[in-house]
Length: 86
Image (cartoon, rainbow, N blue to C red):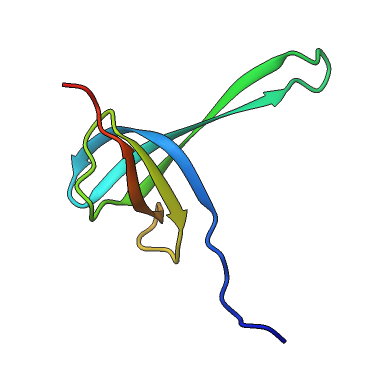
C-alpha cells in the first residue's frame, strides 16, 4: 500500500463573527440545483473554526476539517485568502 496520509477536506468561506476567543464563525455558500424546478439555488452553512492566524470579520478564509476541538468546532483556519476592506 501507499502512504496512509489522509487529505483534509477544505472549504472556502467568509468570516461573519470573531467575537469568541480563538474561534471564528465562517459562512460557506454553495450553489445547488433545485430537484424539481431545476433553478440554481444558493445554500449556506455556518461552521466554527479554530482561528490561529488572526482572521477578522469580513475576511475570506480557507478552512480544513480536523479532529473535534470542542462540541461545535471541527475545522481549522488554514489560510486567509483575502482581507476585508476597512
